[in-house]
Amino acid sequence: ILKVLGSLRELDLSGNSLSCSAVQSLCDALKSPCCHLDTLRLVRCGLTNNCCKDLASMLGASPSLTELDLRQNDLGDLGLKLLCEGLRQPACQLRNLRLVRCGLTNNCCKDLASMLGASPSLTELDLGQNDLGDLGLKRLCEGLRQPACQLRKLRLVSCSLTNNCCKDLASMLGASPSLTELDLGQNDLGDLGVKLLCEGLRQPACQFRKMRLVRCGLTNNCCKDLASMLGASPSLTELDLGQNDLGDLGVKLLCEGLRQPACQLRKLRLVRCGLTNNCCQDLASMLGASPNLTELDLGQNDLGDLGVKLLCEGLRQPACQLRKLRLDQTWMSKKVKTMLTLLQQEKPQLVISS
Image 1 (tube, rainbow, N blue to C red):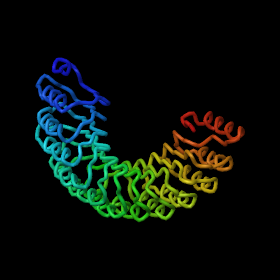
Image 2 (image 1 turned 180 degrees about the horizontal axis):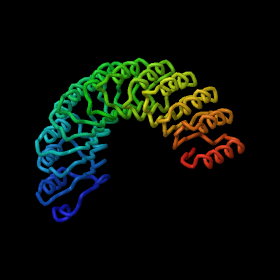
Image 3 (image 1 turned 120 degrees about the vertical axis):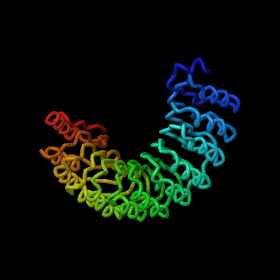
């Protein structure tokens, strides 16, 4: 193993069933000064908490390792506790840790929080599809607020979160200037949750750039708060609101925020948001007044021919700097498809896809 690892920078053993003794042998080799591996992927390898002591020991003795992917292994809270001991070691330089679907609960979040406050090298953490719940998130936020925490990207997709954790999240956003990307997709935050989040995003210390709120149970009732936040959060450049029932009224309200001079949003995704041609006049007007917006995804919305025609009027405006537009072209007439083709010829920098 050591002979092979000496020349490797990346090792992917995903999908192989590894015994505890195999993991121990691998970790012993990784601890050698001759090993310069920077990326290790062990996705779906049948790992349990029994191998985490060896992994932790390796993390504290392998300064070259910067990325570890342990997705879809049943490590559990005990395994995570052991891993955190390794992550806290001064020699550990891990930057990216993926723990998606590892059987974690709120009981491990205190250990995670403590580790975050003692691991300044860690900049990306993916905890998706673990049943952390609101209590777990509350504990996690305590670590994210620590001055030593330098985490930039946090993914919490499908972690059983509700609006009850959003006050803690909002408070953390205003106290964690290093955090720039947060994915809260597939959590039932609802309109109240987003209202609370927006309060955090408006704080001057918040340097957020990317926010994903896909399938979070949102409606048009939260769009006024989102619009207000967009006009007061110049750092935010990417927002994904896909698979939420915002409707035409919701988009109309959003457009008011997008037209604000302070809004610097570049990418907006509104996939499957229940939109029709009735919101396209507002979108067209916004496109002519939002020179920063370069990417707009309107896929899986029934805008119809009339809606697309209205959009084209906005796209032709000189101030519109859109580079990528995604539309559902399934039911578009031949005439409107030709109109889109001609528009792309007029504006060769614009790419329209379906």
